[in-house]
Length: 426
Image 1 (tube, rainbow, N blue to C red):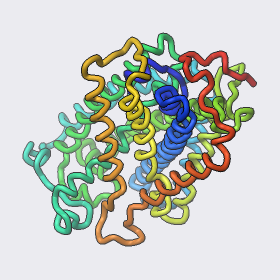
Image 2 (spheres, rainbow, N blue to C red; image 1 turned 120 degrees about the vertical axis):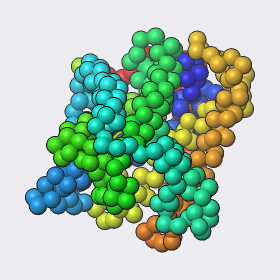
Image 3 (tube, rainbow, N blue to C red; image 1 turned 135 degrees about the vertical axis):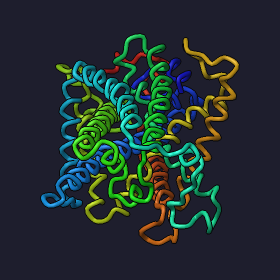
Image 4 (cartoon, rainbow, N blue to C red; image 1 turned 180 degrees about the vertical axis):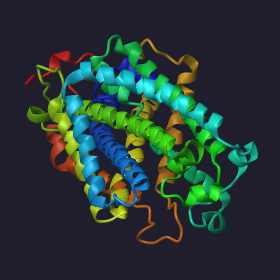
């Protein structure tokens, strides 16, 4: 993806890449398919992040004040709405304000998370053994290790790929970035490397610092339980506030990425151009798509008022939607390598092998994300991802047949990397 964004640094991201890399006769269709997978995946991820943050706030408040606050689906939705509104307001005021929050996000996710990991290890009364951390097997699926095999349970760990998405964020901001052909690919790589280092570090810190395995598993908020055992109630509240702030920043920039993708898609005819394909002249920001992403992320969380099953089904498309949108342009670059005119960032001889491995990996995780993760299988435990995926594919096919095939011609100037001329201002 870094190599592709270096060659095609536009806010459209994956759908624009697909349009450029596909044959001219299939360019519009490739962009339409990729665009909708990316759009729906981004909305679902934004919903999951903000709703997850609302859950963290609500469960932490319930633990701190059990006699004064009882979480309900309504209160969590209310917190979710408040978080989304805060994200929308900050995104409304343009890139200048976002730049400041980008700096605070870097500090929180690096120095903050790093300090938390060190503090956990330093403050813990005793530490779990490396045997426990790296080799203890726990089946939290309800019995798939016996019904299938331990390998199946281990494979369910691929579900953590939900937290390893958003590689396209640098692409969606590339038209607002200096020297994007270099900055955007470096942004993609840096995000992965930094996340891997700090993410793995904080996971190890929590595992080594866990004081009681069984009590932690049975706690309503296991992470908070570990921090209470290590830091005490007050220290745990401070540490949890840090985590909540990190998740809030993640939600903020998820709205940013989502809105830029929607703006580019609308600019190219994928959404109503006269409403969503415009930029506010004062703030140089696509305000309409900022609030479109906020509203859609709120609406997607409403099924949680009925049941957690409905909410899980609605948001289950998040990871698959994004990864398929990443995989399609990569696959096209494999099939029509001669159409891939590389930018300054190049993988040279490693390019084709990495592209092929990427496609195979996306196929594997797509299959695993559709498999059941809990047993016994019932209406409450069924994995509804294949159902939601089927609905999305049906929408893409029908909308193309009855409308888009005649009205959607693909990205404007699909051979160009610079689209400033296509900006429409309010």
